[in-house]
Image (cartoon, rainbow, N blue to C red; front, side, top):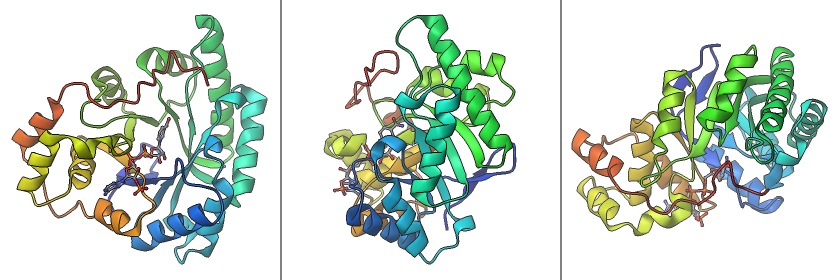
Length: 280
Ligand SMILES: NC(=O)c1ccc[n+]([C@@H]2O[C@H](COP(=O)([O-])OP(=O)(O)OC[C@H]3O[C@@H](n4cnc5c(N)ncnc54)[C@H](OP(=O)(O)O)[C@@H]3O)[C@@H](O)[C@H]2O)c1
């Protein structure tokens, strides 16, 4: 059983999630998500842009776990930013998933190109639609992804409800200290995308040495490192044995010294995607 963080509104968020980026819609994602639920994951992360919400919906329906025991998260695609378009995209997402509510909906990336005022306006309008859907009870928790402090501030200053979660790229060698500190100070829970650096962490010699001490794999070490830093890892694999491996992280504790060693790993294997510079 995976523990939860409790948000200020009482919603429980499982502290380890299962990611579905790059898993094909259809049989691949249906089987993967069903297996993930079977081995114990309860927090499933997708996005409009992953194109696999229908398959995830099928997996949820076919799984033996009750809907209310699952935590289903999706993200608004960049093309749909704005008030009306957000509501439309959200309805499409719900329909594809075959659900009548989402546990978490995130703005996938901030509007950040073009004039500053224009971007702020778009992000605020998008967020107002999130607030509307939240108040209607269609979403249990609302948040953002890839937002830096200067994207979050205008929302916090101008809107009624503060973002509850920020999902950012986070793994050893990519700690994003500024935004992490900003979120902690503002009581915004952090989630880690690519906690294994999409697999690149596994090659790191330092991580291999530390993992060996605990008789754990580098994947398990990275996942536990996120959890001990109070960042929710969202990890992806289509392989059942690895699903089991990645969830078996609650039987060991990384020492303070080793946490520090991992924290000190210099910039390494980041995706290179900067929220102010992406062009999608
Ligand atoms: N918000 C955003 O902008 C954003 C961006 C990127 C990702 N995400 C989310 O974050 C999730 C995780 O990111 P990610 O997909 O880059 O995943 P990741 O968990 O960092 O790495 C996944 C890769 O590692 C492999 N892998 C997983 N567990 C392993 C293990 N125990 N041993 C060896 N290899 C292992 C997987 O291969 P196999 O599948 O072949 O096992 C896959 O190639 C995504 O699925 C998505 O939900 C969000």
